[in-house]
Length: 115
Image (cartoon, rainbow, N blue to C red; front, top):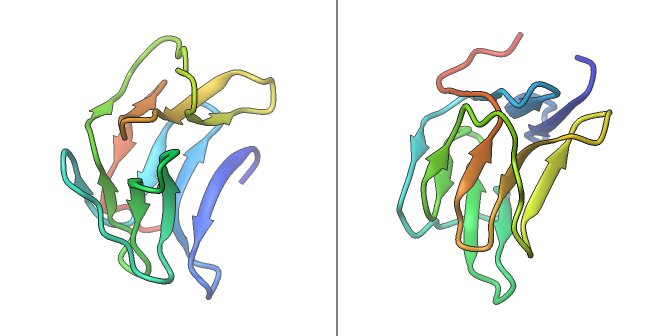
């Protein structure tokens, strides 16, 4: 698949992929502006006090974010204490900030069937 940040379940199936161009694909749907709740097998990004900012549910592949999604940004400037995803050239293509906002250089696609 080339350079990508991939979140898989224990069977090796993709739940979410952020590619080098900053596109994010998820197998489920997105819920914004909610208090995320996580199960034991979910992928989580926490803030500095241990609160959940982002959850990708396993096995559904749903994306739960505490704040909102900002997409199609020509360039990103992550704030302090952000979870940052960079491509192989070192450019930031996505980040989750300390308040639970998700920022993408490109777009998010829901209900993706990965092959």
